[in-house]
Image 1 (cartoon, rainbow, N blue to C red):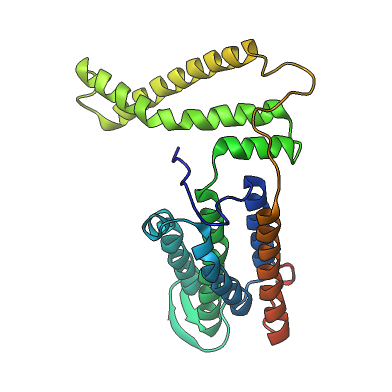
Image 2: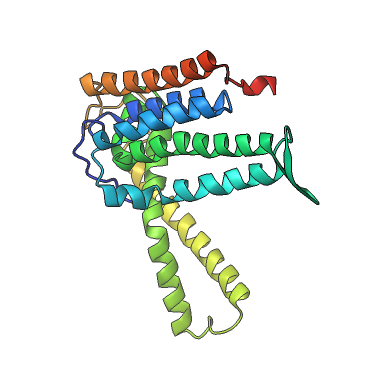
Length: 259
C-alpha cells in the first residue's frame, strides 16, 4: 500500500472522516445529474482549491494520472455509443456520433474529473491508522471490524515483497523456467497459502493482546474534529450547492432518475 503523503496545507491536516464526508458530498451531488454546467462549475472550483491540499504538484500529477487517463477513455465510449440526438456525424455499424453523444461525452469527462480528482487528492494525505481511529471514535463503527480492516490493509504493503520472494525462490529451485500461465497459477496459490497463514498468525496475536475483548476499548490517539474540518466540509457543501444551483438556473439540470 502506498504511504500517505505528508501535506502542509490546511486541507491535509483535516480529520480523515471529514475528508471522507467531503468527498461523498461532492460525489453525490455530481452523480445526480449528467450535464455540462454542474460538472464544469464543480471542477473549476475544485481546481481553485487544489493549492490548499498541501500536496506537491509533481506528486499530485503522478497520483492523479489514472483519473486524467480514465476520464477521456470513458468519454470516448459515450461519444461512440451514446444516446443519439440532433445531427448525426458518423453512422457506421454500432458507432453513431451525434450532437447528443458529443454533449454527453464532454459532460461525462468533466464529471469523472470532478468526482475523481477530489477523492484522490483528499486521501493522498490520509494515514490508514488515523482513518481507523476516526471511523471507530467518531462514526462509531465496531472497533473489531475497524481494527481488523486496518490490519488487513497494512498487510497489503507486503504482498509485492512476498510475490517477489516466491518468484526468486521458485527460480532457485528450477520450477519457474517454463510455462508462464502454469508458473503464475502455482505462484498465486503459494501466495494465497502464505497470506492465509500470516492472517491466522496476526489474528491470534491480536486476540492475545485483547483486540477482541468485550466492552468499550480505549484509544491511544483520540480523534477529534476542529475548525479546519468544519471549513473543509462547508467548502464541499458550497461547491456542490454552487454546481447544482448553476445547472438548475441555466436549465441544464438533467436528473438521472428521469432518464
